[in-house]
Length: 633
Image (tube, rainbow, N blue to C red):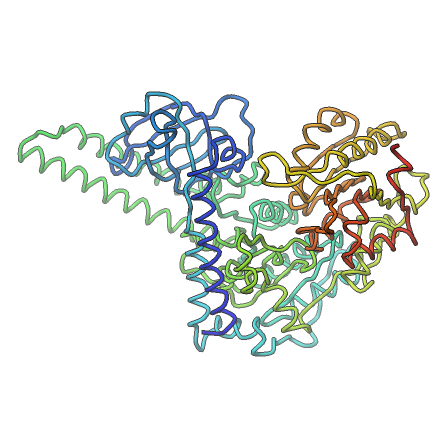
């Protein structure tokens, strides 16, 4: 096995153990309220329905209280269990698998033969249990990549890991492209169409990466369809689905319906199914099979030999009919996918049974800098050619175990491939979001000054007549005594003083002419600070601006606002800045603003790090540096 793949597999084992231990600690030791906050638990729930489904397994349909809007991780196919808070504080549990989740309603199939006796006693909850299936999918993909010999996958492996040079067609004529595309976007599309093995689109913030991908996919599909388009998250896949469909392509979205945005539901395989000519015939077959099962189940447990024989015949006939229906379903699925221009899914979703045995001429992977290396390999096992798109200087993949990160799991295939095959990389160099003052530090620190601001955005400010140097402000809280504190539940950090200062900044914005027409985003790297700001600011300022959002850096990836305010939180005597050291997250935070960016932090704490010292020097030379003492006494 290749050394890189061997280390990745070992790191993946460490990461899987870390996730399992974290789940165990949450379930065994964390209070229900914290588990609900983590999105792995619904409590309390109401029993809406119970019964016995296919295979005579018991099922339960549960519902959260009306008005529940707490984000959660529930979705069909995940292992879960019902629990009772009676007797032993949740010790009574019934394991099963979520069949479907729709809004605040969930359907769980239990593993036992009967419903638990305590189900009607109240104080019932639903909780996810650790799901190792994603890790198994990644491990199987690594094994398949590692053992590939003398085939296309083996060649792609050697190219992406730098053991062979990627091939590019020379002198390929570029098809007509929309005049709205800039020169770097055109070069990137030409690079994709010329690639025989791999092409890489490096898209810094605001440079129109998605637009470039969609146009490239349109031309790839014209040459050989379908194209498989993947991304690490469902939200990214839904965006690509929407944009490809808007460009006139026939798109089929693969994935769990409970995690698909309603805006693209019409493109899902199940919805496409409904309009197919064979759908009614398959539905009729399933109905007929259900009738045979109901007839068979009329025979109770105590019956004679003739009744037993009849019952078996009825169940066998139902099974045969279901088999016919499934074969027809597979035929329809093959027809729908084979005639599509684009098939979209998540990285792990590319293992779905609908794609079993299917290879693609080209696999396009967006946000490749956010995907774990083993997960990126899953769709690549289906590829003849690969397009990676993303930015290694923005959000990295989430790795829970520091040991696994140190073993290489936090290094992405995008980073490896850029280093291994630099001639396949196209850097998008014109951005359409930030004015040039907001853009400049990120551009110099991460992209070697190669990115320019489009003339339409280069000078825009809020308010319109504000000096351009005031579009970037750093407010230094040094000496104020606003020391960081443990957040709610002690799982994060907060800084009440910075919350007070954010409140002041927003108050000034809300009194500025034109405030009702702007979008405002408040960002902090720390969830404890986000929660405190949501509680303090949301009700006060939500109606003052066109849109108003308070969230973490990770949640703002891919978003933008007219005005962004960042609260850095860290303030201590030790100069400890924690994961602010991951400057890729700060690159994301600092590049969300279109017209004004305000950063709040303790310069004496963060200034020992070269990135933040450089930022403060940049602000002092080219923008607006203020002390909190000038603003609040």
